[in-house]
Length: 564
View (cartoon, rainbow, N blue to C red):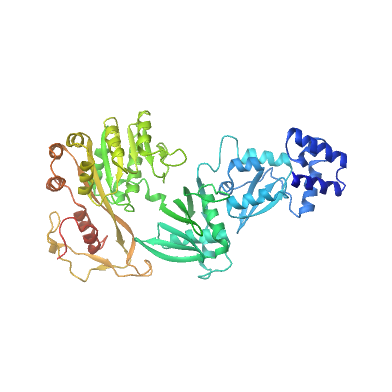
């Protein structure tokens, strides 16, 4: 109320209104609400153009006409729809660390502070008439459609900005919060990193990039920008920024850079000096691919498609975290969607890649939904396929097999190999009869560094294998490595390659499963019947020059032969 009186007093002192008109407008404000200035307009004591002119001159801000103004969607996502409607504000454009925002009253310090808190940017207010601003709010934030609540913002990195940023010194001292945000993302793209860690400390906000499993140091933003950068990331990922205190949160956004679309998921966690952010990035072109594009052999791809055609049962994708199991999971969902005629639903933690035509839900959040409760509810939706990104406990496992009696369940496991996965299922109390009836298959996979094709060369050191692979003796196999070049940054590696082991329970093997044969016996019988182990698939890809044989042997040390 004091702020509104001050505006009224300024108008009175300037001779724009009389004392009686001010008193009448204040009384109307108490009776019907609304802001003082616009009660003055409604009562006919001043014109809208006169108010805009007064505020422009009084506060030294520009006036804008929003009638034909076009605002990029990424800018609209900076401010939630509910906030924009409540405070009567519209974001217009971003330049450096400044956000130009149209509002009714530039004197309202609480609005300016809230915008700064939400976006992590410095608001630069401009004013416009109330009718024009109301029309803009309806156009940009239509009722019933929220621009932000989807939780998926867009970060555009154009070629011009890319070139300009590349020319900056290694430790730029004059970058804005927006520049730092873009720089962190662009460095990840250049390093071919799929994971960014932003760690708040007394010294600032330090970036580290995970490359081939190891965190590499990056730039450190100055401490005075630490909070602004974090808030900007939270805003674009659709995570509400609390005005006091902070709780862990997860969100996602998209990145458009160098003609490619990338998907990013962001996890935020409070620490002593501010939020710690982990951003995981994946190229959209690498998701929902054909199975053979993932690196599966034709035989494995064909068998995986046969298993996905089952109308009920359980199919597991088994790999430690960070080994590409989500990519395989989404490719399976995309394949099932492409087949048509099925109701496909998922429970994910979190949803990392929205797929049109698939009903995806997320565990956790404000509702506190977990996998067991979610799976029970989903079964009332008559699904044909249910996908789960985690089976965290025995209760969830029991529900997975219960659901497998009614539909096909595709679930992710996180064990080292298929033997461990089978043993855990048995230890959790699933009977041999249930496994034999419902378990369709277990697909294990690992990701290995791919040899850079520009500097690939024969491996100088001989690697002796106790056995070869199907139809080829060990001394017939040639292996390769990467010598290191400018293209791969001297590492000899560029990208990653997946190796697979698909344990499919066809009739012969299913009988052994029903009889409760040990997991090791099941795997040995599966290999006798034609299954390729992880190690065998890795050796084959090493002989094709895709991966280093030494990394194959290290990654599959518990499987098959060992180096001599």
